[in-house]
Length: 234
Image (cartoon, rainbow, N blue to C red; front, side, top):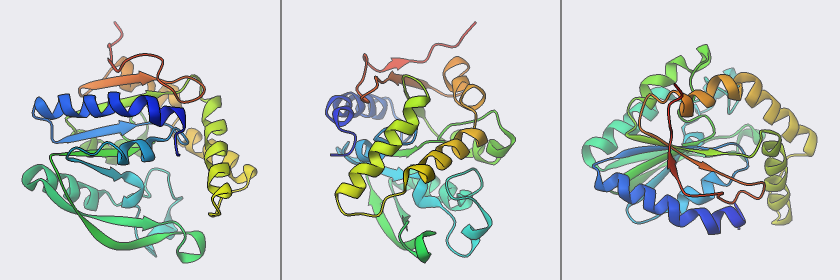
């Protein structure tokens, strides 16, 4: 099971958080979590009228994607993501593309759109909500559309590489394609070089610009306590 202990322990709090936000009138929520934390598996299990959308599915299609480093700022089709969010807020339904990373010789490409309908849309991704970098300025109108954001906090960013390596190992054991350790390390390094945590993620908690909550994880991705409201620093 992806996420291991995190999935078992964090699913109910996430479901409750989504339900409470929906009761308050929220339609669009964000889930920000580091690579390898299990966020994709976790968000897909919420159910109960919650539509899970990964920002990874909004990569540019080929050949536009060849102009960008997949996963880094600029590789996402922001006009299409804007349309997805606006359609869901207005109608409670939308068409969302799906990105297949096995296509185009491993570079990945879009496949057919999928219809989604529900009470609440949860947008998940490692960079959801991130700011503080010129590379993220184009994303900020997207983040302003969100009614709330939940940030999963690792015990340290050294754990992110370990988690990502564990995720690749699980994929390999299941017979799927998996990256070698050196490629995983390079990927995580690129992510955090593009968006330094102290510059781009800590402000989400210290100086939130939209309603924000956080959940601290231990080294096994298990919650260390309940979901808490982010407290701005004086």
